[in-house]
Image (tube, helix red, strand yellow):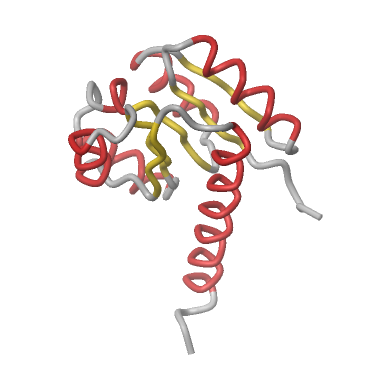
Length: 136
């Protein structure tokens, strides 16, 4: 059982996707806050300090790599990027922006939830190892 409810910032401007993902992730026990543009995403990121960010590549592309890097450095938050179906450009941009995981549209909310759990586990393991002084 989780000791705390992980907070996820979901950033996507396609309302049907946002609603479906938000509903599914809440059903999985996550606290989900959504934003539909860059300005709202930045504001909510700063106030929420999420455990993970799920962001559409079109919106992420409007963030400067420097800004995304500063957020990740300040908060050490993992990022899952959503890209258009089999878009080599979107996948490359996601990697360049430092996404921890990339998922392509269309996707099932269940698949995204599985990736969210995996990335959070990986992030928590890295944090634990860092707190314990590295791997022995």
